[in-house]
Each structure stands twice: as C-alpha cells, then as structure tokens.
Image (cartoon, rainbow, N blue to C red; front, side, top):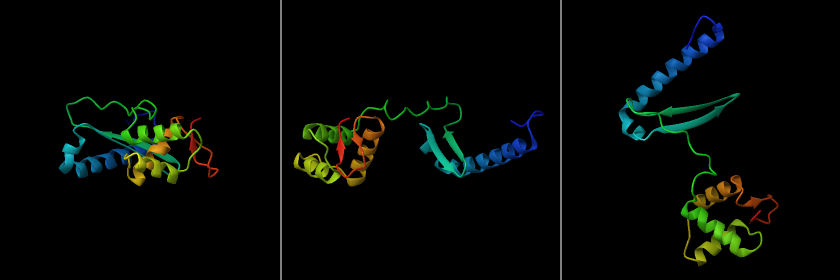
Length: 137
C-alpha cells in the first residue's frame, strides 16, 4: 500500500499494479468457477518475476504450491523411473519410449518429457546431457 514512507517510484508501481490486478479480476469474473480451488500462476518478464494467486471471495487463500519433490509421482513418472532402474544403465528417451510401449505402459511424448524433467529436477534421475541418456544417480 502506498504510504508516506514510500518513494514516488514505489507509489507509481503500486498504483499500476492495483490497476492491472483490478483489470485482471474483471477479465476473470466470467470464468470465476475456474478459481473455485484457486489459480496460481508465475511469470518472469525482464528483470522481474511475479506470482499471482486467485481464489473465491470469502474463502481462505489456497496453500502455496508444494515443491516438485513433495508431490507424489504420477503414473508416468513411476513408470519411467521403474524402466530406468530396471535397465541397470543409462538409457535414452527413445529407449525409454520403446520399453514403456513393450510393457504396455505407453504415455504421450510430452508427458514422458515432463516426467523425465521432474525426475531429474527432484534428483531421482540424472542426465548429464552427454547423449547417453538418463540414469539413477
């Protein structure tokens, strides 16, 4: 909130932010049901980053997103991890795709890519980007 101790630059930024958030809420009002459990978005632009949480009036704000490591594995993540562990060596994405298909556990390409990225991010898989593929750390 602008106050006597804020600089004119902070006051201007606060004014712009309030105006844009009001505009955003007005745009979202027709689809308010989408925010019944809360919406959270993060965006970086230039030197700034923002996190916006939207939720229904009269309810408590949603809890912050859990870190990727705190979330349970999806079916695809569990399948990918099992395939890589069973291989006993580093394997490439095409090999992972083939093994999943052979096991009858095929998933979409983007789903597998997201699963691999998360498993690497949380430390359950490693990928040295050396064309040898993914492995257990």
